[in-house]
Each structure stands twice: as C-alpha cells, then as structure tokens.
Image 1: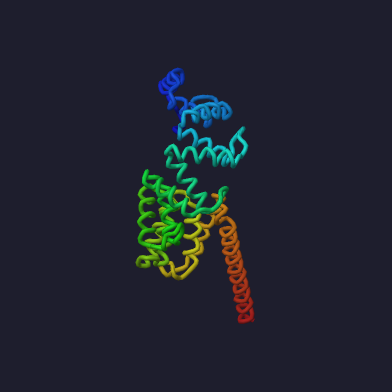
Image 2: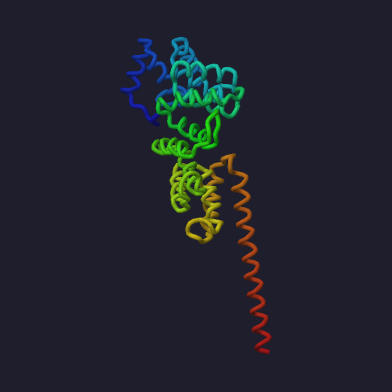
Length: 282
C-alpha cells in the first residue's frame, strides 16, 4: 500500500463501506493493519477481514492466514487458523495462498510433507502468473522433487520467469547455475553480474556469495579481492538473514584475522629492517 492515501480515496472507501462493498471493506482493513490514512488498529482490521471471509473473499482469507502465520500486534501466532484460512483462500482462487501452501507442503512446514500436492498448488499459482511460484517450481525441477525428474533447462526457464518479475531468489538461483555450469555453459563473470543484480534487491545470500567468490581464484577475474569481499560480507550481515548470518560473520572474522596477521608481519619485518640497518651503520 502507498505510504499516504489522499482524502478523496479515503472518502470513496468509506462510502463503499456504508454500502457494504467487499473491496472497500478489504481496503479499509489493510489501512487499519498498516495505519495508512486511519489509526492503526489490528483488532478492528481482523473483524472486517473475518466478516469478509463469510463471503468467501479470497484476499481477506489470505491476509488472515498470513497474520496468524507470522503474528502481529494484537494477533498471536495460530498455525491451525493460518493453514485453515490459507486453504480456504487457495480454494477461492488466491494465487499467493496457493504459492505459500505449495511451499509448505514441499518442505513439510506446518503441514505433512506432500511434494505431489506442493507441485499441484505451485503449478496452479504459476498459471496465474505468481512470480514466487516460478521460483519454487524451478527448484523442484532443478532438484527433481514432486515426482519430477531433474531438468536444468526447465528449472532455468522457471527462474528466468521469476527474474522477469524481479524476484531476487530467482536471479540468485540462475547465478548459481551459471557459476557451476549446471545445464549451461559455465560463466563466472555473468554469474557475478546476476549476484550483483540480486544484491541490489537486498538479497543477503547474493551478497554473501559475492564475498565468497572474491576470496577464491576461480572468480572470473582470476584475482582475489579481500577488501571488496569484506564489504559484501558486512552488507550481508546487516540484513540479519538466518540463512547466511553465521557464515558471513565467520568470514568477516577470518578476513579481519588475516589483516591482523599481515599487519603484524609488516611490523615484524620493519623492525628487522631497522635493526639490520643499525647493525650495518655500526
């Protein structure tokens, strides 16, 4: 939602509420959740959203599912309620609900793992042009899950679709395939470009992988750049991403230790040089 909502838009939404229009009620609930144009009130928003679920309003069901999944101010995490709302939203045609449920079934998170069901839901979401579903399908195709055989070409196709929608994880996965030559010609330089593209979208794993590449010889330029690597590792740390936080922190410490050892060696040899010069003068 935009950070500011003009008064005419608010009046239009309020008029729609008086007429019991579903879309107006839904928009007002979102305004209440985020405090945009009205006082923030999650409890009140829940009442509007629950009222809409009685009408089979798929978007409201999805928002409720996500609120109960992650919790919010005044909303306790309730996985049972979350999955119930997400399933209902999916049945009513919400592509985001299909994608979230597909990911859950694929990984066995909060539901019993069922890769076949995951594949079905993700394909339904992809037909509705859900960008995140493209990424999940790409991963299932790349690693051969859900009864699919591993197919790098199909995986790349899905990732490219995700990239068209500026999904950082899709761009990152293409970079990994290019860097390793998985189903394509190995191209380290292009992989680095893709990682930088994902990094501009604030994707911490891409920042971490860029740092890694800059500390190895096989990085395209054939040179190691610890200074730039350190910069990428530190940027990755700022995002506090649990997937790479520990590794990035370790990498920063290792480079700083290396710098410290180099500095000590320089000081040591400087002292030896000074001593030898003094002996020579004597």
